[in-house]
Length: 325
Image 1: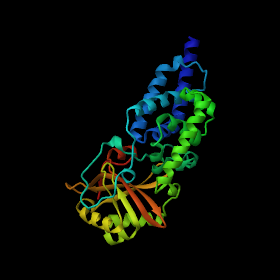
Image 2: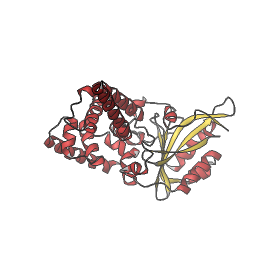
Image 3: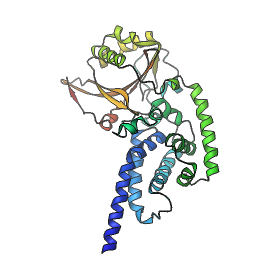
Image 4: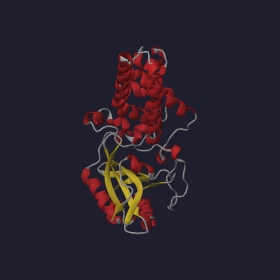
């Protein structure tokens, strides 16, 4: 009886340990998969496998290493048949003519933003740059196993021996994969217009002016905030806009849909400021979810508005399903 109670207590302790590392595990899976929905699924499946396999856990490695081994294998399985997730600006030319966007790609095509994984300020500060959308997109350029090695080594700062145990590799193979991953990432950085802006937080006053101009739909004031090479992208639409003149045309064209919008401030991808856009429902005095705006700044002006049009994100960010005017 005492042995059974001790075993039950041991199980409870280990499952609590899982809950303690769940935020960082979710952030690992998100970096691997580029989608918070896929990351949540992977973490939930990891929990189920941990719970089912606790009796088989022989403690020949740490509990954390064992959990990450399960999660890593799940992510690698998911990525085996998956296509690389992208952003519109990295793989398509800017719109040649300004029309309402039509062509959409599946959700599985895109890198999506994520809410913060922990309420602990220390967790948010540590390597927050590696959670920004641009870096998550760069990670997707790596083969899955190299991606896992680089995340565990350069982001989580694990020793090569622990990474080798987690990914069932030799330490030499880990170091080789890490070198190749770093070389690939360095090449991809050179092609990225926005990598140099990682870690640069937008000016709060500029963000407030963006929200005010958009909510009032003052087109002149809105467009004036953009850099001459300013851009707007709108996953899941492949189309994206570049240049003040084209942005002005696009905002005019979509006025019927966006006028009367309201924004709710949120934080995403490591505490980065963002805004949830609600648009008029067209039926009553309520507003309904539309997109999450993440704004990148260059030289004190808006360089890129990434408007993630995915209403499923709103519940994950803890946002209401409707707003009243």
